[in-house]
Image (cartoon, rainbow, N blue to C red; front, side, top):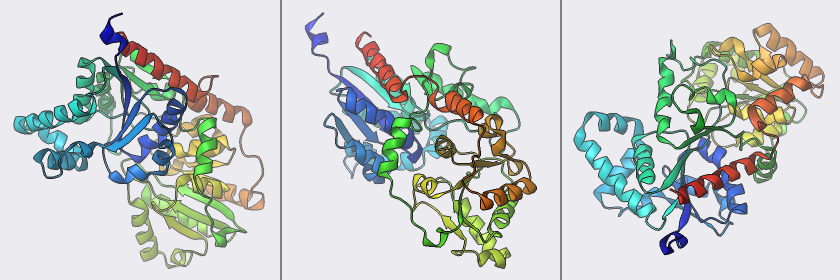
Length: 426
């Protein structure tokens, strides 16, 4: 073994950009930093507010990690800083311009090459980690990393929540699945379960796809995050059946008029307190609030009496702790209450997609107003009555969340270590 190889500096680089990927990758980072003594950089590529995110703060106690903003690499008065700031604010628009205009592509390449040289300058090999994203910036960083001996990974941003694949609002055929094809730039794409892997099987070599389970909903991380999140208090709800309704974003085919009627149906029961929690990337709950108040005075009277709309000021984990029942339109946040044996109701009758939860557990499937009305009456009568067919619930957890018989976070760390060793041998 040569002297250069002996002294090679091995590092891990994790790029985080969004609430979702922070949510799903932080558990992996926790286990990685606490068990593998490899120097690790966590680079926030979007909003500086994430530097003080409670999950990121949890990682700061480890001495083998450096956490910083991507923009820290630029002089704040430089053209590169301006371009970088605008790019990450308007990524979709900029990527379209990069494809159309060679001069913008040239500027982008110049900017991101400078970024890459600064970030990776002290590393001879290692791993570069993103979530499920393939923007021009990601492609450039991945290509740069590969040329310089790094192994590149795409870790989970979330999960697949629908059985249906033609699932976006305006999809009418399978052509839109081609959005997953660019993931082939990575050496490996990691998914939580086989259902999620189906997105990639037509575009990636099977050896590139790794099914490792859900780090976010692993038992170990659930125990940790539940201690990090404060308890939600709502005095008006103390003697009522507490329900949280998680709203999907408007990029999916949902019958929103019927969602409004579902809210009306629920709050007519004085024994119920309903919280409607909007999706973090969409303001649909505000639109729903306005419509309810403008067109239904009776529901307006329910505000604070037995109805509350929450936007971003309360964490979903706190609301799950508070709730007796969860209603969902298709978000992976529902995985957590299922593990806790809390009832999850999927409003299939307002959705053009079909949820994986309903596929596994028919007791969760709500197909009409009558079913919603009747199940609410049962919960009002006895909110502690067992809800799930236990065999179905366990199969869902085995197939969708845990996957392996081993500790999920250990499985991820072992895989990352394997990738590090692979980079050393390049």
